[in-house]
Each structure stands twice: as C-alpha cells, then as structure tokens.
Image 1 (spheres, helix red, strand yellow):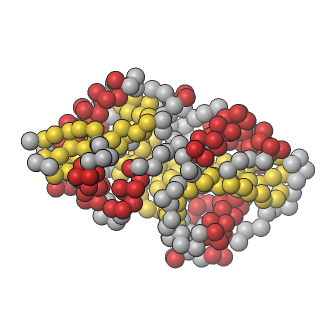
Image 2 (tube, rainbow, N blue to C red):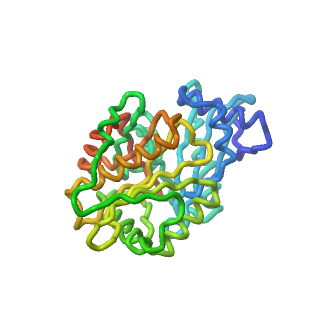
Image 3 (cartoon, rainbow, N blue to C red):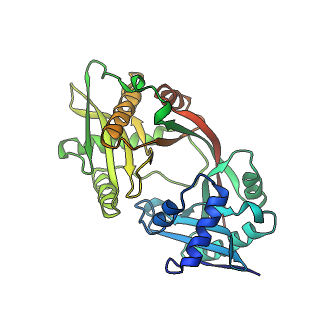
Length: 318
C-alpha cells in the first residue's frame, strides 16, 4: 500500500528511504551529503516541504519544495522524484496531489520545478498534469581537473579594477552593488512566475543577513570603474555549509553601459581562482544560464565550462 507523509527527520528509516530515492534517480549522489543537507537551512526559502512516498516501507518517491518570500510569496519551487523502479505506477501523481494540498494550506497557488531534463519523460509527465514549459536553461559544469588554469588568468581592461569580499558589502560600494544587481532584470524574459527582487541597499543587506544566518559563505567579486568608483559588474557564489568538493554559481551581472568589455568573464575568472586558492579540494562548479543568453554561455565555455544538460522550467498555477 502506498503511504505518503511529510518527512520526519527524527525517523531514521524514513530519512534513509528518502536518500534511497535520491540515489536511485541520481546514482552519483552521496548518501552522507543527502542526509546532511536535510538538516541545513537554506536562505532562499522560508520553509521547505518534504514528502516521502513509501510502499511496504520502501522509498518509492519524494518531493522537496521550497517556499519563496517577498514578491514570490505565492510561489513554491522544487522537484518531485520517483524511484526509477517504481515509475508509471501513479506514484508521481499521488505525490503531486498530496503536495498541492500542503501548498494550498500555506497560501501558495503556483508550483514550479526548475531542473526538468528537456524532452524527457519528466517533462512530458509534467505537461500532462497541467504544467507548462516556462523557460529553457543550459546547465554547464566546470570540472577542475579537466580545465586549463590559463583560461582564468584574465587582466582587468583599462579603466577598471577588481575587488572582492565575503559576506558584507563595503559601505562605500553598497549603492552601486544594488544598482548593478538590479540590472539582472535585463536578462532574457521567461514565462516563469518568479519575480526578481527590487535590489535596493536595504535589500542587499537583508540578503547578506539571511545568508549569514544560514551559515552560507557568500563570496562576491566585482569590477569597479576607476573613474567613478562604482561597481559595474558583479558575480556571486554562495558556499553552503556542506559544500566541500562542489559549488553552484548564483548571479553574474554587468550593467548595460559597461557591456562588451569582457567584465563578465573577468569577474568569473577571478572568482574561480579565488575559490580554488582557498578550497583546493573543490572538484566541480555548476552554473545555469537561460538558453537564450548565448553570450554568457560562451563566456562560461571560455572559462572551461561544458554543457552538462539542457533543462526546462515547468510551471503550474492551481
């Protein structure tokens, strides 16, 4: 008999069953890392809903969905995963129905999953259950052992310098950091329900405080225009407590007036060198880019990233 319940982190059998499903779907996953991540807070979400589906005690499906805040307070984001040996038996649909009940009870009316493999059975399943494809993304991977370190040795063009910090933005750069982050709104438009925050100095400070509270080491590299002392390009990598051999890129932004000077590649190259100098055990860095953003995809390729897979964002209002 199929049983679906919220995951109880004090129930070791349920936790292991949850990990079983993750590992069956993603064989390269580490059981130790999966279990540890369940107890880590995530500054991106106010709450994470996790459901476990079991059949006669065996883990057959899971859902892990984060609840966003602010302008996205009606949106939930995350995947439903079914054990490969139990697909096409209604497990995913039963999990979806249980999840929607949980989300409605929390005032949510939209669910998205951001990493569904393009043209896969997962995409077809989602579309058949009322989701629509809201965006296409390219996931790229930098495998440190396979990369050429010379590709990260980029010098700042004339008129610019690089600065960096961990955690709190220097006060004299705060306003221009907020302005640069606001330029993310120039990214290719999608049909995703997610709304980018309005980046003000207060919003930057709030984001930094939330990262600190979650134990996240937020690393920032910027390009500063020498003539004005203003930040005109920025990239961010958040290192979560369990990140040792891997990292995931967050945002890279260049203000419109300063595009075309190689500043995006500059700040990203500096970030890679900085990460590897401090964390020589780092093996891989992942990043996702809108499929329409061919410029940033090329920048990543020049730094040694290779395309790992194409994914879609699926979205459903309910």
